[in-house]
Length: 508
Ligand code: HEM
Image (cartoon, rainbow, N blue to C red):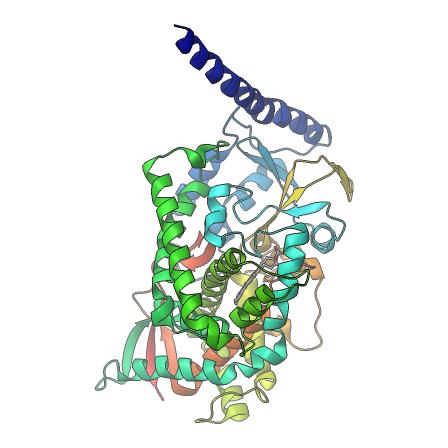
């Protein structure tokens, strides 16, 4: 009996603080935050006590994505992120919605966006792509994308030099070789027919995976394949987690999904462990990403990185580097397939700058101005990262608003990129001439790579890869959108075509 009472007492001692913490964070804090936001006239859909607007968000998304778009046009915000259109129409801007106990204040004023992202005082911390949901962090490990404070600064210091423009330019021969072998395979697709269909979305994922494996880790796609495949499994589970409200401690409950999450995580780490062992020695002298991280693991300086930290960074780069760039190339190819006049202009430029048979190189790549404009316009209309989240760490005044600590700010990149007040009445149209030399735009109005101290560290690599690949495709093929393509852009952590990207290619 005494033993039973002891167990009950111990149970109560554990349960009571947990329940009190839940009441505090799920009831008291949201109530306080909501009052402060309301007093300033910031409104949003009525929230449910525990789940906030998670269900409303899911319903909006399900309705918007129940069918593809009727035609291939670029007014895509209402399908990809319908809450950026529905809720401000009803509640004004800025508006707030709730995911569980956290308010997400959506701010789209470029000046405010710039203030938040360029802040260096620590007032606005990263909230991560999952808005702080620990189940989403698994995808990126504890790598740069999710890190903050001193650890972020240390990792950024080691990693940033791996992606400076000079080093990236040095990787161009490898990038052209890998791209060329993909295009050779395309050419051999159906030797007899001059025209054939390819799902470029699939092809670009393999291409970019191969490039990242090679230039960052000194390995090949075949070696890294298992990591990519496991990450795709992990992505599906992360997506499920992102659409539900996270209850503190839930990740430790041994549900079937949580066990699979653990297992996948462990398998990915094991694969990376092996990859580093195999490629580590040859990378150490080669100044690629893995080499730089391994060298940093051997120093006694303040920038020393441990082995587990290196694994976390590898995870981040495999995912952050592949999904984003592959999707940029996919949308750029689809856009050029649809807008034939720009395809011709871009091809004329490539043939003039690189010739018909020469690969692009470090010297002539910067002369591909039209290709660059096409890529920038693609990133405006179809930004792979659709929004950024920031956590407000202390009470702060932003323009006319008093934002309480504990609010999450959501910066809706895609909505800002399609805003007619910024880009004019043709905001939803494809017009690369917006990015012609000499034209300028507000720093907070165009941010596919983010801005400020945490701006994408892989930006140079992404743009060089995309330019090289697009130029080489233009040299060898003309292409149109296939009749089997269905236009259905969808957010799957990054913005992708739901049913693939089928184009009809013609050898030239
Ligand atoms: C078109 C391609 C890409 C796009 C649109 C893109 C976009 C972004 C965005 C929006 C951010 C967030 C910035 C912030 O939170 O302030 C980011 C961060 C990051 N990206 Fe990219 N990215 C791309 C390619 C890449 C590539 C190729 C790599 C690496 C191989 C990479 C690695 C990273 C990392 C590590 C961060 C975190 C930076 C930090 O917090 O210091 N990205 N990217």
